[in-house]
Amino acid sequence: MRIGIDVDSGERPFEELVQGAIKSSKLYPSVTIFLIGKSDRIRNTFANIESLNNIFLVDAKETILMDESPILALKKKREATVFIGTRMLKNNSIDVFFSPGNTGATVAASVLTLGTIHGIKKPSLATFFPRIGGGETLILDVGANPESNAETLFHNAIMGLSYYKILCEKEEPTLGLLNMGAEFGKGNTNIKKAFYYLSSIPSFIGNVEGYNILNGSVDVVVCDGFTGNSILKFAEAFKDLFSSTLKEVFLGKQKNNESKSFLSYTLNLFGFYKEKKKLIYEKITPKFFGSAPLLGVNGTVLVGHGMCTERDVMNSVDLAYKLYQDKFLRRLMVSVKKLQKK
Image (cartoon, rainbow, N blue to C red):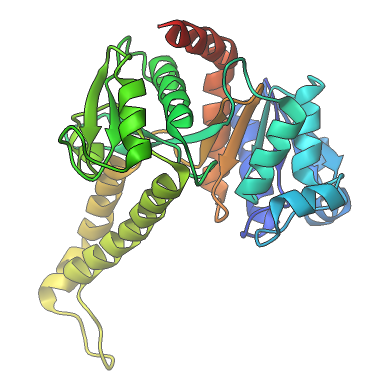
């Protein structure tokens, strides 16, 4: 497998992204990694990087910043990292492209360069959420398209079901439409129309609410990109709140240099807090974190979070490798075509 990694975009230091790529290159010696960014800066920081057999540098003179307008930036910056990465994918120089940069720019560059697969008008970003009792729930769209009509939601559904089948190896995943209530007839005109479209899918169970994402009652949840992205960002913030609360409860607060309680000290001394925190985080962290696939474009594109860390890069390479091994794109096209006929 060959993967192109945009190491100049996002909000974290580029060194973290490169370091994640280097570690992945050692874990996957058969994978060729192309680092897309300012080559001289990479060489100056990582003096021996070109001695690694499976890492190559691809120079990019421009980067689209997080606060730039995607369309305007793409018109001006034809040599931006996202354009170079999607062109490499189009020309079959790489098998997967990953960028943690401006989501709008990555989506736009992918659509402009690669086009969409047959029958799909707009792509969608899909990500997994952990759920009670084990397993994971897929939710899409989480940010590719803030506004979605009924047809787009239907397309999101068939892509989400196809992706879930491939990644989770479940033949008939259940499907739900995110709504303000589970009862029939809830929601605005667009949601009601989408409900009608989705009713043609055998595994559609109807409207679902936010708690269904976590309670294990549905496999795939469909919504527009504005709602999905808001849920994703809330979940990320809640994880930080959970971590802070856990630390406060187990280790206690230190105010005005007061010593910790004997119980807090004892728990900390035996590493109880760290051990339990690690176990809890393993339970609430989805297996495939760090990036989300851009479903619907004619190529395998992974979009990372702006605050993508070294670990996120490594996990994204893990996901890319699995998708490549499973012939993801070809199987997705076949599955989407079958569902559309139904």
